[in-house]
Image (cartoon, rainbow, N blue to C red):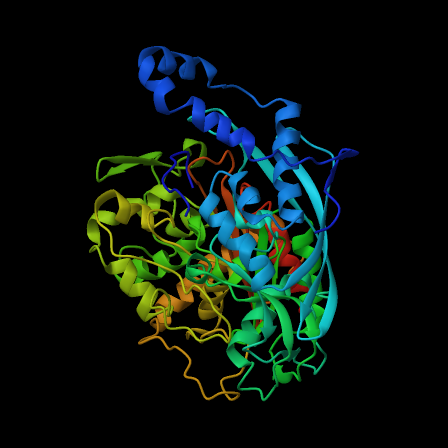
Length: 557
Protein backbone atom coordinates (compact mmCIF):
# COMPACT_ATOMS: atom_id res chain seq x y z
CA UNK A 1 0.00 0.00 0.00
CA UNK A 2 1.21 3.53 -0.66
CA UNK A 3 1.81 6.39 1.71
CA UNK A 4 -1.80 7.53 1.86
CA UNK A 5 -3.51 6.59 5.14
CA UNK A 6 -6.98 5.44 4.30
CA UNK A 7 -8.51 3.29 7.00
CA UNK A 8 -9.12 3.46 10.72
CA UNK A 9 -9.36 0.06 12.23
CA UNK A 10 -11.79 -0.95 13.85
CA UNK A 11 -13.10 -6.42 23.94
CA UNK A 12 -13.73 -9.17 57.65
CA UNK A 13 -9.98 -9.87 57.28
CA UNK A 14 -6.72 -8.04 57.68
CA UNK A 15 -6.47 -4.68 55.88
CA UNK A 16 -4.59 -4.49 52.61
CA UNK A 17 -0.86 -3.93 52.60
CA UNK A 18 0.55 -1.33 50.20
CA UNK A 19 4.27 -0.75 49.97
CA UNK A 20 4.78 -2.20 53.43
CA UNK A 21 2.13 0.08 55.00
CA UNK A 22 -1.23 -0.99 56.41
CA UNK A 23 -4.11 0.52 54.45
CA UNK A 24 -6.34 2.84 56.47
CA UNK A 25 -9.97 3.42 55.54
CA UNK A 26 -10.97 7.05 55.93
CA UNK A 27 -14.16 7.50 57.91
CA UNK A 28 -17.35 8.82 56.44
CA UNK A 29 -17.01 12.05 58.43
CA UNK A 30 -14.64 13.46 55.86
CA UNK A 31 -17.32 13.28 53.20
CA UNK A 32 -19.85 14.88 55.56
CA UNK A 33 -17.61 17.87 56.22
CA UNK A 34 -17.11 18.42 52.51
CA UNK A 35 -20.86 18.35 51.91
CA UNK A 36 -21.54 20.78 54.75
CA UNK A 37 -19.00 23.30 53.51
CA UNK A 38 -20.35 23.07 50.00
CA UNK A 39 -24.03 23.74 50.76
CA UNK A 40 -26.56 25.19 53.18
CA UNK A 41 -26.43 28.58 54.91
CA UNK A 42 -22.69 29.06 54.43
CA UNK A 43 -23.07 28.84 50.69
CA UNK A 44 -26.04 31.25 50.67
CA UNK A 45 -24.16 33.89 52.67
CA UNK A 46 -21.40 34.33 50.12
CA UNK A 47 -22.06 32.54 46.84
CA UNK A 48 -19.44 34.37 44.86
CA UNK A 49 -16.74 33.88 47.47
CA UNK A 50 -17.54 30.18 47.88
CA UNK A 51 -17.52 29.61 44.11
CA UNK A 52 -14.20 31.35 43.81
CA UNK A 53 -12.80 29.31 46.68
CA UNK A 54 -14.05 26.09 45.12
CA UNK A 55 -12.39 26.94 41.82
CA UNK A 56 -9.11 27.55 43.59
CA UNK A 57 -9.42 24.30 45.57
CA UNK A 58 -9.79 22.08 42.47
CA UNK A 59 -6.42 20.41 42.16
CA UNK A 60 -5.09 19.64 38.69
CA UNK A 61 -1.93 18.24 37.24
CA UNK A 62 -0.16 14.92 37.67
CA UNK A 63 -0.99 12.79 40.69
CA UNK A 64 1.56 12.61 43.45
CA UNK A 65 2.80 9.30 44.84
CA UNK A 66 0.88 9.99 48.06
CA UNK A 67 -2.36 10.64 46.18
CA UNK A 68 -2.05 7.41 44.19
CA UNK A 69 -1.16 5.34 47.26
CA UNK A 70 -3.94 6.84 49.39
CA UNK A 71 -6.62 6.33 46.73
CA UNK A 72 -5.50 2.75 46.18
CA UNK A 73 -5.43 2.14 49.95
CA UNK A 74 -8.96 3.41 50.38
CA UNK A 75 -10.36 1.23 47.59
CA UNK A 76 -8.48 -1.99 48.38
CA UNK A 77 -9.09 -1.80 52.13
CA UNK A 78 -12.82 -1.21 51.73
CA UNK A 79 -13.10 -4.03 49.19
CA UNK A 80 -11.17 -6.45 51.41
CA UNK A 81 -13.34 -5.61 54.42
CA UNK A 82 -16.52 -6.17 52.42
CA UNK A 83 -17.53 -2.50 52.59
CA UNK A 84 -18.84 -2.34 49.05
CA UNK A 85 -20.40 1.17 49.16
CA UNK A 86 -17.14 2.68 50.41
CA UNK A 87 -15.07 0.77 47.86
CA UNK A 88 -17.38 1.82 45.03
CA UNK A 89 -17.27 5.45 46.19
CA UNK A 90 -13.49 5.34 45.84
CA UNK A 91 -13.88 4.80 42.07
CA UNK A 92 -14.96 7.09 39.24
CA UNK A 93 -18.01 4.90 38.44
CA UNK A 94 -19.78 4.18 41.71
CA UNK A 95 -22.78 2.38 40.23
CA UNK A 96 -20.83 -0.04 38.05
CA UNK A 97 -18.28 -0.74 40.77
CA UNK A 98 -20.99 -1.37 43.39
CA UNK A 99 -22.81 -3.82 41.12
CA UNK A 100 -19.73 -5.89 40.29
CA UNK A 101 -18.28 -5.86 43.80
CA UNK A 102 -21.65 -6.92 45.23
CA UNK A 103 -21.79 -9.79 42.75
CA UNK A 104 -18.24 -10.77 43.69
CA UNK A 105 -19.60 -12.01 47.01
CA UNK A 106 -23.22 -12.88 46.25
CA UNK A 107 -22.95 -14.37 42.77
CA UNK A 108 -19.34 -15.55 42.59
CA UNK A 109 -19.44 -16.78 46.23
CA UNK A 110 -15.94 -15.52 47.04
CA UNK A 111 -15.03 -15.10 50.72
CA UNK A 112 -11.97 -14.46 52.93
CA UNK A 113 -10.49 -12.02 50.45
CA UNK A 114 -6.97 -10.72 51.00
CA UNK A 115 -5.63 -7.97 48.75
CA UNK A 116 -1.92 -7.18 48.73
CA UNK A 117 -0.58 -4.25 46.75
CA UNK A 118 2.65 -4.37 44.82
CA UNK A 119 5.05 -1.61 43.86
CA UNK A 120 3.40 1.48 42.42
CA UNK A 121 4.42 2.46 38.90
CA UNK A 122 3.24 6.01 38.26
CA UNK A 123 -0.54 6.03 38.66
CA UNK A 124 -0.79 2.24 38.35
CA UNK A 125 -0.84 -0.07 41.39
CA UNK A 126 -0.63 -3.84 40.84
CA UNK A 127 -2.12 -6.07 43.51
CA UNK A 128 -2.61 -9.75 44.24
CA UNK A 129 -5.89 -11.37 45.24
CA UNK A 130 -6.29 -14.42 47.45
CA UNK A 131 -9.60 -15.83 48.61
CA UNK A 132 -11.86 -18.84 48.66
CA UNK A 133 -14.64 -19.76 46.26
CA UNK A 134 -17.30 -21.49 48.36
CA UNK A 135 -20.43 -23.07 46.90
CA UNK A 136 -22.79 -25.51 48.67
CA UNK A 137 -20.15 -27.07 50.89
CA UNK A 138 -17.38 -27.14 48.29
CA UNK A 139 -14.42 -24.77 48.76
CA UNK A 140 -11.54 -24.05 46.41
CA UNK A 141 -8.69 -21.56 46.93
CA UNK A 142 -8.53 -18.65 44.50
CA UNK A 143 -5.47 -16.59 43.64
CA UNK A 144 -4.73 -14.16 40.81
CA UNK A 145 -3.10 -10.82 40.05
CA UNK A 146 -4.75 -7.61 38.94
CA UNK A 147 -4.02 -3.89 38.82
CA UNK A 148 -5.73 -0.52 39.20
CA UNK A 149 -5.01 2.96 37.91
CA UNK A 150 -5.72 6.15 39.83
CA UNK A 151 -7.03 9.20 37.98
CA UNK A 152 -8.01 12.71 39.00
CA UNK A 153 -11.73 13.53 38.86
CA UNK A 154 -12.14 16.56 36.63
CA UNK A 155 -14.81 18.42 38.60
CA UNK A 156 -12.98 18.51 41.94
CA UNK A 157 -9.54 17.01 41.36
CA UNK A 158 -10.15 14.11 43.77
CA UNK A 159 -7.94 11.04 43.11
CA UNK A 160 -10.12 7.99 42.39
CA UNK A 161 -9.64 4.49 41.03
CA UNK A 162 -10.41 4.46 37.31
CA UNK A 163 -13.16 1.88 37.05
CA UNK A 164 -13.06 -1.03 34.67
CA UNK A 165 -14.34 -4.54 35.34
CA UNK A 166 -10.80 -5.81 34.75
CA UNK A 167 -9.82 -4.25 38.11
CA UNK A 168 -11.83 -7.00 39.83
CA UNK A 169 -10.47 -9.75 37.58
CA UNK A 170 -8.21 -9.35 34.50
CA UNK A 171 -10.36 -11.71 32.38
CA UNK A 172 -13.39 -9.42 32.70
CA UNK A 173 -14.45 -6.99 30.02
CA UNK A 174 -16.76 -4.14 30.99
CA UNK A 175 -20.28 -5.52 31.34
CA UNK A 176 -19.14 -9.08 32.16
CA UNK A 177 -19.93 -10.72 35.50
CA UNK A 178 -18.46 -13.42 37.75
CA UNK A 179 -20.69 -16.34 38.71
CA UNK A 180 -20.16 -19.59 40.61
CA UNK A 181 -22.68 -22.38 40.24
CA UNK A 182 -23.72 -25.38 38.22
CA UNK A 183 -22.32 -24.79 34.76
CA UNK A 184 -25.02 -24.38 32.15
CA UNK A 185 -22.81 -25.96 29.50
CA UNK A 186 -21.06 -29.30 30.01
CA UNK A 187 -17.29 -29.38 29.42
CA UNK A 188 -15.80 -30.87 26.29
CA UNK A 189 -12.63 -32.78 25.61
CA UNK A 190 -11.31 -31.51 22.29
CA UNK A 191 -9.20 -33.90 20.24
CA UNK A 192 -6.79 -33.27 17.39
CA UNK A 193 -7.13 -35.13 14.11
CA UNK A 194 -4.98 -37.99 15.49
CA UNK A 195 -7.10 -38.43 18.64
CA UNK A 196 -4.81 -36.62 21.11
CA UNK A 197 -6.26 -34.14 23.59
CA UNK A 198 -5.90 -30.43 22.85
CA UNK A 199 -5.20 -28.30 25.92
CA UNK A 200 -4.56 -24.62 26.42
CA UNK A 201 -1.47 -25.47 28.46
CA UNK A 202 0.15 -27.20 25.51
CA UNK A 203 -1.28 -24.91 22.84
CA UNK A 204 -1.78 -21.40 24.36
CA UNK A 205 -3.53 -20.04 21.25
CA UNK A 206 -6.39 -22.50 21.61
CA UNK A 207 -7.91 -21.06 24.81
CA UNK A 208 -10.64 -19.12 23.00
CA UNK A 209 -11.09 -21.97 20.49
CA UNK A 210 -11.68 -24.49 23.28
CA UNK A 211 -14.16 -22.09 24.93
CA UNK A 212 -15.99 -21.82 21.62
CA UNK A 213 -16.09 -25.58 21.12
CA UNK A 214 -17.57 -26.02 24.58
CA UNK A 215 -20.20 -23.38 23.93
CA UNK A 216 -21.30 -25.01 20.67
CA UNK A 217 -20.85 -28.70 21.43
CA UNK A 218 -21.00 -29.01 25.23
CA UNK A 219 -24.56 -30.32 25.26
CA UNK A 220 -24.43 -32.04 21.88
CA UNK A 221 -21.37 -34.05 22.86
CA UNK A 222 -23.18 -35.72 25.76
CA UNK A 223 -21.24 -34.24 28.69
CA UNK A 224 -22.53 -33.45 32.18
CA UNK A 225 -22.10 -30.02 33.74
CA UNK A 226 -20.02 -29.50 36.89
CA UNK A 227 -19.75 -26.57 39.35
CA UNK A 228 -17.54 -23.75 38.13
CA UNK A 229 -16.39 -20.21 38.82
CA UNK A 230 -16.95 -18.48 35.48
CA UNK A 231 -16.85 -15.24 33.55
CA UNK A 232 -20.31 -14.71 32.06
CA UNK A 233 -20.05 -12.41 29.08
CA UNK A 234 -22.11 -9.24 28.82
CA UNK A 235 -23.66 -7.55 25.82
CA UNK A 236 -20.52 -5.91 24.47
CA UNK A 237 -18.41 -9.05 24.84
CA UNK A 238 -21.08 -11.07 23.03
CA UNK A 239 -21.01 -8.56 20.20
CA UNK A 240 -17.31 -9.33 19.94
CA UNK A 241 -18.26 -13.04 19.98
CA UNK A 242 -16.33 -13.78 23.16
CA UNK A 243 -17.36 -17.00 24.90
CA UNK A 244 -18.01 -17.50 28.62
CA UNK A 245 -14.81 -18.54 30.36
CA UNK A 246 -14.22 -21.02 33.20
CA UNK A 247 -11.74 -19.65 35.75
CA UNK A 248 -11.93 -22.37 38.41
CA UNK A 249 -13.54 -25.80 38.53
CA UNK A 250 -15.01 -26.69 41.92
CA UNK A 251 -16.37 -30.07 40.91
CA UNK A 252 -15.70 -31.80 37.66
CA UNK A 253 -18.39 -32.37 35.15
CA UNK A 254 -18.28 -35.23 32.69
CA UNK A 255 -16.90 -33.94 29.38
CA UNK A 256 -18.21 -34.86 26.00
CA UNK A 257 -15.71 -35.46 23.20
CA UNK A 258 -15.31 -33.32 20.09
CA UNK A 259 -12.82 -34.18 17.38
CA UNK A 260 -11.24 -31.35 15.40
CA UNK A 261 -9.24 -31.18 12.18
CA UNK A 262 -6.15 -29.69 13.86
CA UNK A 263 -2.78 -31.36 13.29
CA UNK A 264 -0.79 -31.59 16.55
CA UNK A 265 2.57 -31.11 14.83
CA UNK A 266 1.43 -28.21 12.67
CA UNK A 267 -0.40 -26.56 15.58
CA UNK A 268 2.81 -26.74 17.60
CA UNK A 269 4.72 -25.22 14.67
CA UNK A 270 2.17 -22.41 14.34
CA UNK A 271 2.41 -21.63 18.07
CA UNK A 272 6.18 -21.42 17.78
CA UNK A 273 6.04 -19.12 14.76
CA UNK A 274 3.66 -16.51 16.17
CA UNK A 275 5.49 -16.46 19.51
CA UNK A 276 8.35 -14.59 17.86
CA UNK A 277 6.14 -11.66 16.80
CA UNK A 278 3.84 -9.33 18.71
CA UNK A 279 0.21 -9.27 17.52
CA UNK A 280 0.68 -12.03 14.95
CA UNK A 281 -1.91 -14.55 13.77
CA UNK A 282 -1.80 -17.37 11.24
CA UNK A 283 -4.06 -20.10 9.80
CA UNK A 284 -3.07 -23.20 7.81
CA UNK A 285 -5.68 -25.29 5.98
CA UNK A 286 -6.06 -28.04 3.40
CA UNK A 287 -7.50 -26.59 0.14
CA UNK A 288 -8.89 -29.88 -1.16
CA UNK A 289 -11.20 -30.31 1.84
CA UNK A 290 -11.29 -27.02 3.77
CA UNK A 291 -9.93 -28.69 6.94
CA UNK A 292 -8.17 -26.25 9.26
CA UNK A 293 -4.84 -27.75 10.28
CA UNK A 294 -3.51 -24.99 12.56
CA UNK A 295 -4.57 -21.65 14.04
CA UNK A 296 -2.39 -19.51 16.28
CA UNK A 297 -2.24 -16.01 17.76
CA UNK A 298 0.60 -14.41 19.68
CA UNK A 299 -1.97 -12.44 21.69
CA UNK A 300 -4.23 -14.78 23.64
CA UNK A 301 -7.79 -14.23 24.82
CA UNK A 302 -9.22 -13.15 21.45
CA UNK A 303 -8.95 -15.32 18.36
CA UNK A 304 -7.77 -12.69 15.90
CA UNK A 305 -7.00 -15.37 13.31
CA UNK A 306 -10.69 -16.34 13.12
CA UNK A 307 -12.50 -13.26 14.41
CA UNK A 308 -10.25 -10.37 13.52
CA UNK A 309 -11.59 -7.62 11.25
CA UNK A 310 -8.67 -5.86 9.59
CA UNK A 311 -7.98 -4.24 6.23
CA UNK A 312 -6.04 -6.89 4.26
CA UNK A 313 -4.07 -4.48 2.09
CA UNK A 314 -2.62 -5.80 -1.12
CA UNK A 315 -3.46 -9.46 -0.45
CA UNK A 316 -6.94 -8.34 -1.59
CA UNK A 317 -5.43 -7.90 -5.04
CA UNK A 318 -5.81 -11.66 -5.55
CA UNK A 319 -9.59 -11.22 -5.60
CA UNK A 320 -9.39 -7.95 -7.53
CA UNK A 321 -7.15 -9.54 -10.16
CA UNK A 322 -9.64 -12.33 -10.74
CA UNK A 323 -12.29 -9.67 -11.29
CA UNK A 324 -10.19 -7.60 -13.72
CA UNK A 325 -9.16 -10.67 -15.74
CA UNK A 326 -12.77 -11.88 -15.99
CA UNK A 327 -13.86 -8.46 -17.28
CA UNK A 328 -11.00 -8.24 -19.80
CA UNK A 329 -9.56 -5.25 -17.97
CA UNK A 330 -6.26 -7.04 -17.40
CA UNK A 331 -4.34 -10.05 -18.64
CA UNK A 332 -1.22 -11.56 -17.09
CA UNK A 333 1.20 -10.96 -19.97
CA UNK A 334 -0.41 -7.92 -21.56
CA UNK A 335 0.76 -4.35 -21.08
CA UNK A 336 -0.86 -2.62 -18.10
CA UNK A 337 -0.44 0.91 -16.69
CA UNK A 338 1.39 1.43 -13.40
CA UNK A 339 1.82 5.21 -13.03
CA UNK A 340 3.20 6.95 -9.92
CA UNK A 341 -0.22 8.42 -9.15
CA UNK A 342 -3.85 7.96 -10.10
CA UNK A 343 -6.74 10.15 -8.96
CA UNK A 344 -10.23 8.79 -8.54
CA UNK A 345 -13.17 10.12 -6.55
CA UNK A 346 -11.09 13.19 -5.59
CA UNK A 347 -8.44 11.02 -3.90
CA UNK A 348 -4.90 10.88 -5.21
CA UNK A 349 -3.55 7.34 -4.87
CA UNK A 350 0.13 6.43 -5.13
CA UNK A 351 2.50 3.48 -4.97
CA UNK A 352 4.93 2.67 -2.20
CA UNK A 353 7.81 5.17 -2.52
CA UNK A 354 5.96 6.60 -5.54
CA UNK A 355 7.42 4.01 -7.91
CA UNK A 356 6.13 3.43 -11.43
CA UNK A 357 6.55 0.67 -13.99
CA UNK A 358 6.93 1.90 -17.53
CA UNK A 359 5.79 -0.38 -20.33
CA UNK A 360 5.16 -3.21 -17.85
CA UNK A 361 2.72 -6.10 -17.86
CA UNK A 362 -0.09 -6.78 -15.40
CA UNK A 363 2.01 -9.66 -14.05
CA UNK A 364 4.81 -7.23 -13.24
CA UNK A 365 2.36 -4.88 -11.50
CA UNK A 366 0.90 -7.74 -9.44
CA UNK A 367 4.31 -9.08 -8.47
CA UNK A 368 5.56 -5.67 -7.36
CA UNK A 369 2.16 -4.78 -5.83
CA UNK A 370 1.48 -1.66 -7.86
CA UNK A 371 -1.55 0.10 -6.37
CA UNK A 372 -2.28 2.36 -9.34
CA UNK A 373 -2.47 -0.61 -11.71
CA UNK A 374 -5.64 -1.59 -9.86
CA UNK A 375 -6.99 1.85 -8.96
CA UNK A 376 -6.76 2.88 -12.63
CA UNK A 377 -9.44 0.31 -13.47
CA UNK A 378 -11.98 1.70 -10.98
CA UNK A 379 -13.76 3.83 -13.63
CA UNK A 380 -14.56 0.63 -15.56
CA UNK A 381 -16.20 -1.14 -12.62
CA UNK A 382 -19.61 -0.94 -10.99
CA UNK A 383 -19.82 -0.10 -7.29
CA UNK A 384 -20.81 -3.70 -6.45
CA UNK A 385 -18.38 -5.50 -8.80
CA UNK A 386 -15.82 -6.39 -6.14
CA UNK A 387 -18.51 -7.34 -3.61
CA UNK A 388 -20.09 -9.78 -6.05
CA UNK A 389 -16.72 -11.30 -6.96
CA UNK A 390 -15.82 -11.87 -3.28
CA UNK A 391 -19.21 -13.44 -2.55
CA UNK A 392 -19.88 -15.44 -5.68
CA UNK A 393 -16.40 -16.85 -6.33
CA UNK A 394 -14.58 -16.76 -2.97
CA UNK A 395 -17.53 -17.35 -0.60
CA UNK A 396 -16.72 -14.28 1.50
CA UNK A 397 -18.74 -11.45 3.03
CA UNK A 398 -22.02 -13.36 3.37
CA UNK A 399 -21.90 -14.22 7.11
CA UNK A 400 -22.64 -17.83 6.22
CA UNK A 401 -19.62 -19.83 7.34
CA UNK A 402 -20.16 -22.60 9.91
CA UNK A 403 -16.65 -23.51 11.02
CA UNK A 404 -17.43 -25.07 14.40
CA UNK A 405 -16.61 -21.95 16.45
CA UNK A 406 -17.39 -18.28 15.90
CA UNK A 407 -15.70 -16.62 12.94
CA UNK A 408 -15.78 -13.35 11.02
CA UNK A 409 -16.31 -14.24 7.39
CA UNK A 410 -14.86 -11.11 5.81
CA UNK A 411 -16.55 -7.92 4.66
CA UNK A 412 -16.50 -6.41 1.19
CA UNK A 413 -19.24 -3.77 1.31
CA UNK A 414 -20.61 -2.00 -1.74
CA UNK A 415 -18.92 1.40 -1.90
CA UNK A 416 -18.57 4.23 -4.36
CA UNK A 417 -16.06 6.75 -5.59
CA UNK A 418 -12.72 6.82 -3.72
CA UNK A 419 -13.79 4.21 -1.18
CA UNK A 420 -14.64 1.76 -3.94
CA UNK A 421 -11.26 2.35 -5.52
CA UNK A 422 -9.52 1.87 -2.17
CA UNK A 423 -11.34 -1.46 -1.75
CA UNK A 424 -9.58 -2.77 -4.86
CA UNK A 425 -6.28 -2.64 -2.96
CA UNK A 426 -7.67 -3.97 0.33
CA UNK A 427 -8.36 -0.67 2.05
CA UNK A 428 -11.62 1.30 2.20
CA UNK A 429 -14.26 -0.76 3.97
CA UNK A 430 -12.76 -4.19 3.19
CA UNK A 431 -12.07 -6.31 6.29
CA UNK A 432 -10.49 -9.76 6.55
CA UNK A 433 -8.52 -12.04 8.88
CA UNK A 434 -5.97 -14.82 8.45
CA UNK A 435 -8.68 -17.48 8.04
CA UNK A 436 -10.36 -15.51 5.25
CA UNK A 437 -7.15 -14.90 3.33
CA UNK A 438 -5.95 -18.51 3.73
CA UNK A 439 -9.27 -19.50 2.16
CA UNK A 440 -8.61 -17.11 -0.76
CA UNK A 441 -5.31 -18.86 -1.54
CA UNK A 442 -7.03 -22.23 -1.14
CA UNK A 443 -9.67 -21.22 -3.68
CA UNK A 444 -6.97 -20.25 -6.17
CA UNK A 445 -5.14 -23.52 -5.56
CA UNK A 446 -8.18 -25.75 -6.23
CA UNK A 447 -10.30 -23.46 -8.37
CA UNK A 448 -13.33 -23.98 -6.14
CA UNK A 449 -14.29 -22.41 -2.82
CA UNK A 450 -14.52 -24.94 0.00
CA UNK A 451 -15.57 -23.43 3.31
CA UNK A 452 -12.88 -23.93 5.97
CA UNK A 453 -13.95 -25.92 9.00
CA UNK A 454 -12.53 -26.95 12.38
CA UNK A 455 -15.14 -29.60 13.19
CA UNK A 456 -16.45 -31.90 10.48
CA UNK A 457 -20.07 -31.22 9.49
CA UNK A 458 -20.65 -34.95 9.93
CA UNK A 459 -20.52 -34.37 13.70
CA UNK A 460 -23.69 -32.29 13.83
CA UNK A 461 -25.11 -32.29 10.31
CA UNK A 462 -24.61 -28.55 9.80
CA UNK A 463 -24.51 -27.09 6.30
CA UNK A 464 -21.26 -25.59 5.04
CA UNK A 465 -21.28 -22.40 2.98
CA UNK A 466 -20.82 -22.58 -0.78
CA UNK A 467 -19.99 -20.12 -3.56
CA UNK A 468 -22.43 -19.69 -6.43
CA UNK A 469 -19.89 -19.96 -9.24
CA UNK A 470 -16.26 -20.67 -10.13
CA UNK A 471 -13.72 -18.76 -12.18
CA UNK A 472 -13.24 -19.63 -15.83
CA UNK A 473 -10.32 -21.89 -16.65
CA UNK A 474 -8.48 -18.99 -18.30
CA UNK A 475 -8.96 -16.67 -15.31
CA UNK A 476 -7.85 -19.35 -12.86
CA UNK A 477 -4.77 -20.19 -14.92
CA UNK A 478 -3.69 -16.55 -15.10
CA UNK A 479 -4.32 -16.00 -11.39
CA UNK A 480 -2.11 -18.97 -10.53
CA UNK A 481 0.53 -17.59 -12.89
CA UNK A 482 0.43 -14.22 -11.10
CA UNK A 483 0.84 -15.78 -7.65
CA UNK A 484 3.57 -18.19 -8.80
CA UNK A 485 5.53 -15.33 -10.38
CA UNK A 486 5.20 -13.25 -7.21
CA UNK A 487 6.47 -16.16 -5.11
CA UNK A 488 9.48 -16.59 -7.39
CA UNK A 489 10.37 -13.05 -8.45
CA UNK A 490 8.10 -10.54 -6.71
CA UNK A 491 7.59 -9.14 -3.23
CA UNK A 492 7.06 -12.65 -1.80
CA UNK A 493 10.26 -14.14 -3.23
CA UNK A 494 12.49 -13.71 -0.17
CA UNK A 495 9.99 -15.26 2.24
CA UNK A 496 9.14 -18.11 -0.15
CA UNK A 497 12.77 -18.99 -0.86
CA UNK A 498 13.16 -22.69 -0.16
CA UNK A 499 9.42 -23.42 -0.40
CA UNK A 500 9.38 -25.84 -3.30
CA UNK A 501 6.71 -27.43 -5.47
CA UNK A 502 3.51 -25.91 -6.80
CA UNK A 503 3.53 -22.56 -5.00
CA UNK A 504 1.93 -19.15 -5.19
CA UNK A 505 1.91 -16.11 -2.91
CA UNK A 506 0.88 -12.48 -2.41
CA UNK A 507 2.11 -9.91 0.08
CA UNK A 508 0.24 -6.99 1.54
CA UNK A 509 0.56 -4.04 3.87
CA UNK A 510 -2.45 -2.12 5.16
CA UNK A 511 -2.07 1.38 6.51
CA UNK A 512 -4.04 2.22 9.62
CA UNK A 513 -4.66 5.70 10.98
CA UNK A 514 -2.70 6.25 14.17
CA UNK A 515 -0.15 3.54 13.43
CA UNK A 516 3.43 4.34 12.51
CA UNK A 517 3.80 1.00 10.75
CA UNK A 518 1.22 -0.73 8.54
CA UNK A 519 -0.16 -4.20 9.24
CA UNK A 520 1.84 -6.80 7.32
CA UNK A 521 -0.07 -9.54 5.43
CA UNK A 522 0.95 -12.66 3.51
CA UNK A 523 -1.11 -15.38 1.83
CA UNK A 524 0.25 -18.38 -0.05
CA UNK A 525 -0.25 -22.00 -1.07
CA UNK A 526 1.99 -25.00 -1.60
CA UNK A 527 0.54 -28.23 -2.94
CA UNK A 528 -2.47 -29.14 -0.80
CA UNK A 529 -1.71 -26.52 1.83
CA UNK A 530 -2.79 -22.88 2.02
CA UNK A 531 -1.95 -20.37 4.72
CA UNK A 532 -2.23 -16.71 5.58
CA UNK A 533 -0.87 -14.55 8.35
CA UNK A 534 -0.94 -10.98 9.59
CA UNK A 535 1.40 -9.09 11.90
CA UNK A 536 -0.24 -5.93 13.20
CA UNK A 537 2.00 -2.88 13.07
CA UNK A 538 4.63 -5.13 11.55
CA UNK A 539 5.43 -3.31 8.32
CA UNK A 540 5.69 -4.97 4.93
CA UNK A 541 4.06 -8.39 4.77
CA UNK A 542 6.96 -10.07 3.01
CA UNK A 543 9.27 -9.24 5.93
CA UNK A 544 6.89 -9.96 8.84
CA UNK A 545 4.01 -12.32 8.09
CA UNK A 546 5.81 -13.94 5.15
CA UNK A 547 8.37 -15.97 7.15
CA UNK A 548 5.61 -17.25 9.44
CA UNK A 549 3.48 -18.50 6.55
CA UNK A 550 6.44 -19.93 4.64
CA UNK A 551 7.65 -21.85 7.71
CA UNK A 552 4.25 -23.52 8.08
CA UNK A 553 4.09 -24.44 4.41
CA UNK A 554 7.50 -26.08 4.78
CA UNK A 555 6.47 -27.84 8.00
CA UNK A 556 3.45 -29.30 6.20
CA UNK A 557 5.74 -31.32 3.93
